[in-house]
Image (cartoon, rainbow, N blue to C red; front, side, top):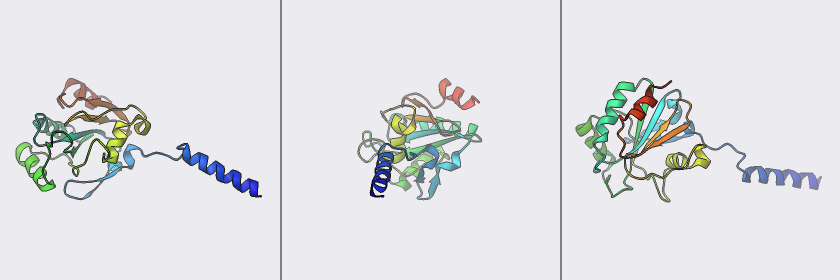
Length: 181
């Protein structure tokens, strides 16, 4: 009897150490909006998603305009999620209210913006740990290189591609991906 219990305990330990338990998928994430509300990624099922780390004082900041144009044109089956981040050159120093005001007044942003997070380093947000780790996303490892790096997620919650920060949101590659079935 003692041997049987010991064997069962050992089996449970091995299973937990080997990662047998299910890891988080894209739709398991819940984050906070820029205004402090809850946003559940499960609400994105069936839609293509672009996740972008944004900044208000960056050379790439004018991409907000193109992001908003994409969102307005394709928002029936495509969502852009912006994550303000201050990781690169302190180019997003603002508070939530300042970020919202800047994005609304300068670019008319209506796509969802989440609370300011870290997209690299020890304090990297969980969603970015998933986006950048093949072990977690099952597709590829990546590193967030600068503001406005874009992660493309398909309708089933799978990471599809990572787009360079300098590449425009309305590039042929992105437009073809959004339009593909």
